[in-house]
Image (cartoon, rainbow, N blue to C red; front, side, top):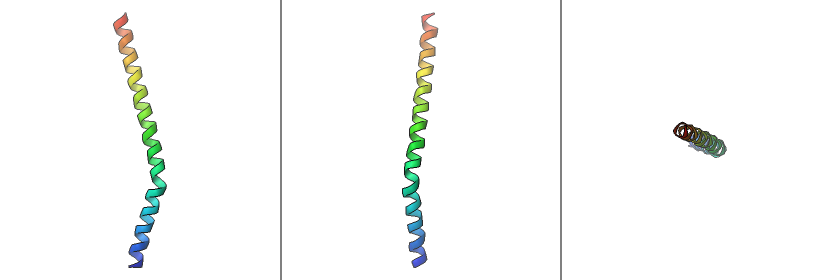
Length: 50
């Protein structure tokens, strides 16, 4: 029973430590995706103006 508790505690601690890292990675990926969409929109506008 004690081993099961320790395992669950270890998993819970890992989740708590890893969550901010995962959130930061998701934030960076979203920024990169939005930046790429902006570049694509700008290129399309430039093609239409010419």
